Length: 372
Image (tube, rainbow, N blue to C red):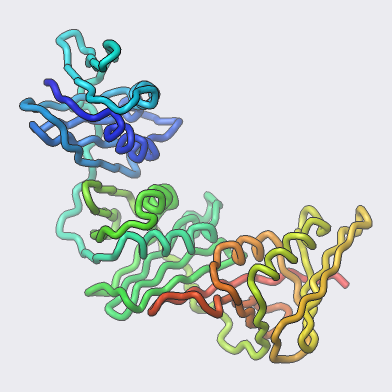
């Protein structure tokens, strides 16, 4: 088995696939890339059992065969080459020899048959979505997903498809983000929970992509197909909490303010907050927003006044500044609106501008009890 391929083209594809490989694999074979050669087409796969990703590369060859090549060793070698054609030849003594314009390098390979097969999805449901829209949906939600192993359903992003819209939700019980597109829809109603790792991989590849992505899914797995790449992953098992129930419907108090101004202010003031609670206090009266924080143990405190547009009763509400900073940093509008009902009910953060047609983002941040 022999093939010729461009060094930079191969490196670029392998670096993307390398993101799948886990540092602590239970099966040694998973530390390898699977090379499956069918004449001029080389399919390279990487897997951690939960997620399998493969890409089809164009190469020069008249041969066929499958081998498993050590991923780390190959990546480290390819990174050092300038752009040039590389020739891969599989030798009889269980090594694969790479020839470059400078020299020859031999690495031991494993039998390709040992590599776990990617899961097939018999008779799946499918939805098509533009790559950049999917990347935006992941970006806007994934930061709000939890990290608690005891509540696995909250450690992923909830995909909710219907003929009216596509909705993506993530929450860790302290903050919640709901991202919705009414300009894209699915043929039938479906819901599933995607784990973070494959979403992070997709987000990286699809940013700014004009490609269409086909999402196929059944009860246990989902498959994303685009361009020359395919990603199959196991879904998180379980029922997602009823997030609509926690979004307060009546919020008479509405604050509108410049996002960057509020974000800088919260960042500065939060430096003086208590290091365990990260609590900041928002006090709103008339057109003035007063942001303050205090760390009584160290006698540190800070206070800032901002002008805002506000409709509602005067109120004081406490938030965890880290959650607020994360949410404000994840929006890209010029102005945001914060809607509230009571100091012990969640605040709803939405961008006041800068959204595409059919796009909506709702962020919910739980308040913290203020100690007077």
